[in-house]
Image (cartoon, rainbow, N blue to C red; front, top):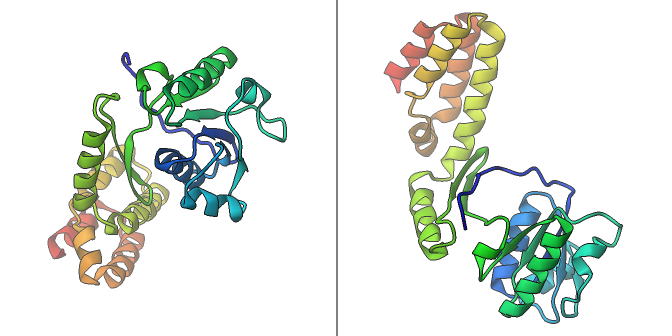
Length: 231
């Protein structure tokens, strides 16, 4: 692939198509469902995990091979596909899916030949509002997953609560402090709070309540600094 442009797509409620039924297809489907997409799968056979999703009604499953026109036709409700994934174990099928998507102007990812598609999916670590994405540009997805695993070990589950807290504290400062330069100084200083450690130690909730109350009373850099020193 050439140079790419990393973005985060809002696809909640959007129709997305995955062609394939193996583990690669399941990973694509799982990511799409996590983003709130409406997912359809075309494959003559699927693994147990995809079958379970279809049985629960989480995905629409078409138990047949891909056929020309599947991309052009769109979803059952007439919606145009937002994203298409070619994830079969047959390179020639993946190429046909890719060619049809390209002809329709639909973004497509090709699992075994990423250079053919219009986008690739990075390895992702999610911690609430924090998203860490690693891409090797298709050179080595295995390395991307390895690096993502290393990041997941550094940025543990506590970072989800940390992100929620930073958003809460930021909103309070924006509401109570008019001076933009002062707000920016406070935001930068807030990052000195070792909130993840407080969460791991079980001391976060009482610290959070005390801090937010103090910021309400005195929303200034001195208050922020006082809590930095007390961590």
